[in-house]
Length: 122
Image (cartoon, rainbow, N blue to C red):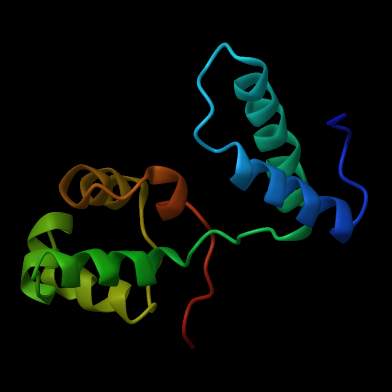
């Protein structure tokens, strides 16, 4: 199969079908090389046509708190302020760089997510 940049939905679907057919191909084989190339052009097409927005930082914090069975008091200990914890979770106050560093360290949320702008509540 000759692989080119994907220019249509039909071509995208054909490449997905072919990728599924050779999914278990071994590295270093012609089919393994074809699989690698298909993955690259499919990824490029999906990035352009089906972009995924970065999640809201506060929603990610709330999700991680839930996963870790952490309450607001626990979050307040992470950011070193109980009153700020409530304000942050209600989007009344933005995260500071120091908070982002602590949240990243304690909750494991990537800093790239935490630094994303988000709309504050009125």
